[in-house]
Image 1 (tube, one colour):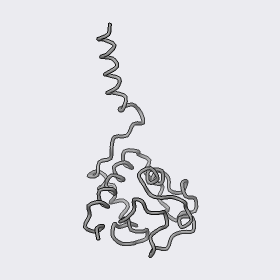
Image 2 (cartoon, one colour; image 1 turned 60 degrees about the horizontal axis):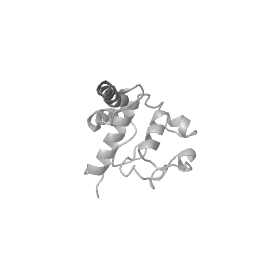
Image 3 (tube, rainbow, N blue to C red; image 1 turned 90 degrees about the horizontal axis):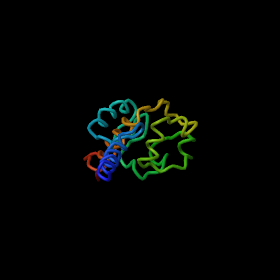
Image 4 (tube, rainbow, N blue to C red; image 1 turned 180 degrees about the vertical axis):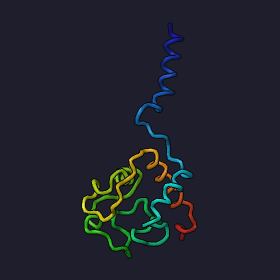
Length: 131
């Protein structure tokens, strides 16, 4: 009896991460393609309609010195990390009411994970982001 129970438990432990709602780790290659949507307003190394993304992780929301933010973003008490970016990218206007980022958000959790993975990689390795 122990063997079948052990087999069932092993199978459950392998399948549990694949259950509904589970998100695989982000894939930076897919995230780079998703970032192409962001480039209408953002760039890594310089400000456009939106602020630059170099130095994003660990930066306070509204923290790029030479960018003019909405009052809502300038006063948001948020530090960008994987979790806060995930929440913001889900629905920017709901997370920071009054933000001028008029983007509806990314509904797909895997796409958000991929984008965040690419942003991490780009910030860590891009020549545009390193001094």
